[in-house]
Length: 267
Image 1 (tube, rainbow, N blue to C red):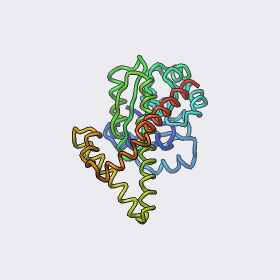
Image 2: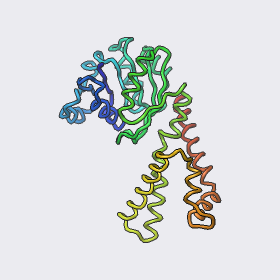
Image 3: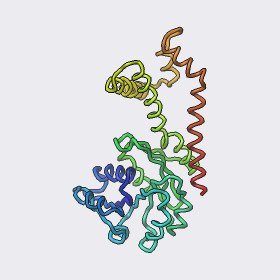
Image 4: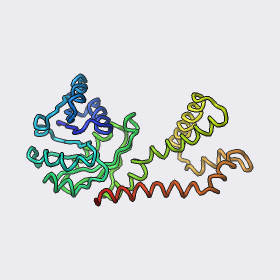
């Protein structure tokens, strides 16, 4: 199985690293393509990559092609790709807002998988939702899933509507966490903690809370009740959030991201 990643930006390189370091490629190097000569020169120094500046030198050889360019480069890229393709190839999109139908029509190819990755894939903690066109077989989909899982976990969804919904939860979700962390950092610093101590207080609190959640069957609501005593400090904080409608505002933010994903797919 020969795998090619087109685009060595954030997501493209993240998935390239995960797949190349896994045993799935049967000791073959992962092929990677980028338009930047400087990027290619850097990638050529990495032993598990075969780096290419020209698509014609790598695209015809590939069995599975991951596309990790910015969405606004997609149309131009598809035009360049089209003469070099064959119908047995599988195309996996890491691009936001690019639909399966648009890829099928632009490439003239029937086997397309659309994904929604997220940033924690960079540290092997990603979650990637994915769905496929009707011509992708179960065996082919399993191969793609195994490759996606090299950066964390993947979730198969039944249609592209759930890809857009995943954008609002997992795709954009890390930014919501960073937003909350930033607010807590600022509060700690205002209370007089040093920058370093503020970072430790906030990051370890988040990490510990997530671990508690993952190692139990308890809901976040139950954990909140365990932490918050009636009339205590935590309850005062939670009551303040409820009074300021923070719960609804977070839901509204997730739906704003979802609606924007739908809009991008329709443009």
